[in-house]
Image (cartoon, rainbow, N blue to C red):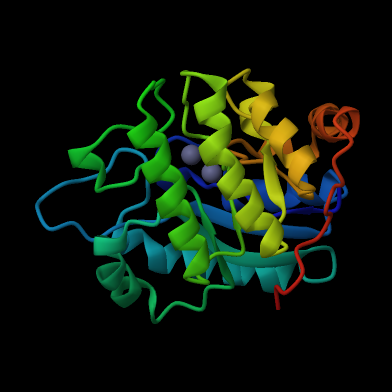
Length: 254
Ligand SMILES: [Zn+2]
Ligand SMILES: [Zn+2]
């Protein structure tokens, strides 16, 4: 594997290792393009501190340190500075103001919540609600359609456990949208290695039907993952046995 655009840092409070260790492990793992995409902060309307993402005041340090590493390691690896964020329509104006002065290379969409997190539950919890699935797919498409994101992390995160027919009816819309936009579908390494509900086998059957290409996102919260050849092979195998074409490098990133 030569590129990975899904990498976290300790600022999100649930990752380990220094920024430098992520870079050095990626180089050791043979990765040529490394994108950092730590969990993006939000500006909330009330006093609230998220337990799973960096604080707004950490953004400057995040970008500064990655810029230094980008320069220092430029001969060995291409580093991009990005963020992973939900698309939550009513919260976007304040996020835009927060991010506007930072030289970010890209954003990925990771729809862990479809509303401000203190008002809702994690989309990864099991649900049989068609309305929840429909909202997740609608809002993900709306987010991707905004042009803010280069791709979507774990698009199969919403954990619908009701009838397959309902699962298919909504998730296929997301697959078809991404196909139309020529956007690869992420096979999430973290989910695969930890045996989570994603990557979801049914979801990737739909991708095969629709003809989506896939991209492997490490979702690394530990630097050692970036040099773990066995983990990489398991992801490639997941794609291979399903006959899914792997997109190695994202087009269009400067
Ligand atoms: Zn995370
Ligand atoms: Zn992530």
